[in-house]
Length: 248
Image (cartoon, rainbow, N blue to C red):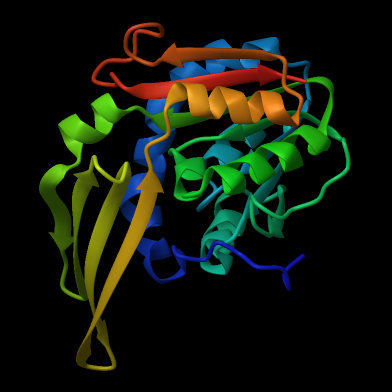
């Protein structure tokens, strides 16, 4: 699978994600996942962590006794994931192109990862691959962000950190006319006594709920429910964080 095209945009900033965002994203997702997914699975269920990043969710699922396979397009991310979740299987591949047999009780994707697939055709391909990998009656749970979230939080704000050996900053912007959110990273690293600068831009698509539901139905999912993390699941400061729950 490693020779296929991959979404590898996070390779150069994987360490930033691991150090600053991985556990933060997991903490936000724990309560929704317990309510919407884990409480409905048998013991030792086989779970595919799609776009697994640096492996924080895979590690959590392992500690709860599940069999875990992680898949990501970033080789650097998977290096961290293998360190974080010893005992999981990890696959270097792309959500748009992977092919796995129907062996999973559930597929899960957090951190809004599937929104990085900018075209609806690409998102539909990912959904089709997930459907094929699920056992009959299997669950697919993933989250995305509504326009409410992008407009309220992706407003040009800056965040970052400075250490002795590195410094980084990220600015988030939302462009409503394009329905595109952009994360613009600037990273400085001290390498052999010299500072090296990298500028990386990562995009996300703000999909309407109806678009996502239509794509899911196109590939065969017939039971699709949508939950707002704050309004429906009582997760504070999470309005606009949408969770889609689909059953094969």
